[in-house]
Image (tube, rainbow, N blue to C red):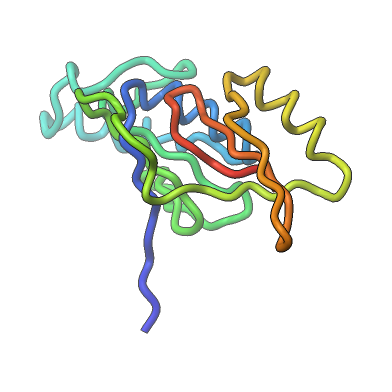
Length: 149
């Protein structure tokens, strides 16, 4: 049996994180506005649980990004494949991630990707060079570490 999963990432600003990671990975921010409008229409969700994001209704406390080639539920906008979900939490990040994302670049493009990601708000933490490979440890705009290979 295979299980469906998504990676959930705590965030101070889930919508900004979704934009960063969608741009970083070439993913799409999920459009849940159809589902949200239906739930609002029948009184199953309060308007204050939503915000305007990219010109449409989105959940205030969470938003996901998905791989553009993966299937999704057209009724809800929810991805059914590779997906990152950002959820709002009140506390700030206090230590090193125990889980992180490795981002792999095409051969010869890592330096250009570093420049692009820095332009999106990432920062380089340090350069790692070991017998098994070489990569950069970077941080996203909320200081979550990820590796750029």
